[in-house]
Amino acid sequence: MAERALDEPPSRFSERDIEFLDHLLQDMFGLGLKLEYCLLVLDEAPAQARVGMEDVVSGLEGMVDPIRAQILKLGRSRNLSQESTDKDRHV
Amino acid sequence: MSESPIRVLLVDDHEVVREGLKALLNRREGMTVVGEAGTVAQSVEVAVKVRPDVVVMDLRLPDGSGIEACREIRSELPGTKVIMLTSYADQEAVMSSILGGASAYLLKQTRGSQLAEAIEGVARGESLLDPAVTLRVLEEVRKSAAGKSKAASPEAQLTENEQKILHLIAEGKTNREIAAEIYLSDKTVKNYVSNILSKLNMKRRSEAAAYITRRDIQDPSRNDSGG
Image (cartoon, rainbow over all chains, first blue to last red; front, side, top):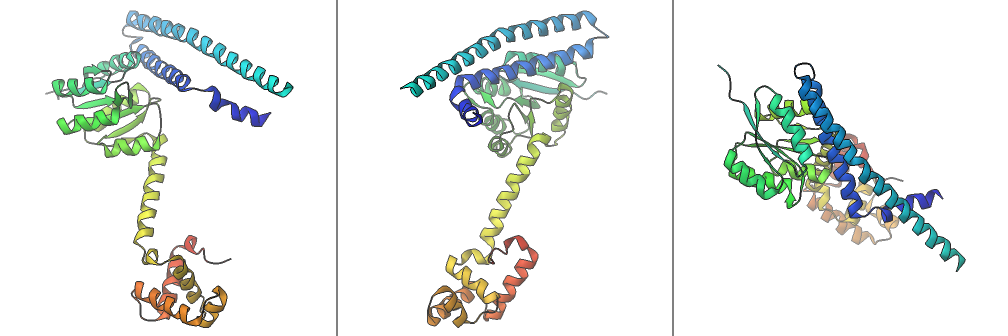
């Protein structure tokens, strides 16, 4: 079981999946910078900080849907691979 | 009398990263973002136009590598410093960036304020490596140095058999004893010994024995002939 779990990731992660994760990482970094900026201006320009924070919230919201879709896709591909393994066993 | 601000060019294909960096760096006293680019081609074009003091460069760009862009910008504008800002502590990328003329290699986990400090340092002529990549670079340098010193050692000129015989000489064995141990004739061993001494530029076998003993004392890890 553990051996199979170790075997699975390379076959399940395609170049596109890696690109997707990289994109998420960049977005998180960018949003983090924006939040850091909001913290810096919070006292002197609260309205500006507020606008920035709203941007960050929107950015995070924008990340949720693609992540959800990716998890579903990975779940589906795992189920398909599980089904085909089960079929092979029965042949 | 105020010094002129550090002029920064941001190169990253992710707009959200550029936006975050621009907001933070423009707020920093003595620093101003003078341009942005999202590709290698754009970065060179914009750099030549705005002549920045420091370029903050992503490693992975849609039309090529940031290292390539770094090289081109540095050849056009030798006074411009380049900071590689990337998500990955890839050893090869770090070494290529350094060789490509980058002044710093930072990971995208660096806080904006630290990045601003890095930009100021690089503008003053300093070089910086993210602590997460320093260890990898040191390993690479050590490996390279070890390779060079091994290649430079007189022993590197000896064949495998000659090295084996050299170690047996160091153990104080006679030609006959060596011959019996490695299943060769006395005459062949004599020829080997003569070749070894000639390659090591020595006259007597006692010199060869002393050389091996001295080397093993200085670097015990190299004493791999026993057992």
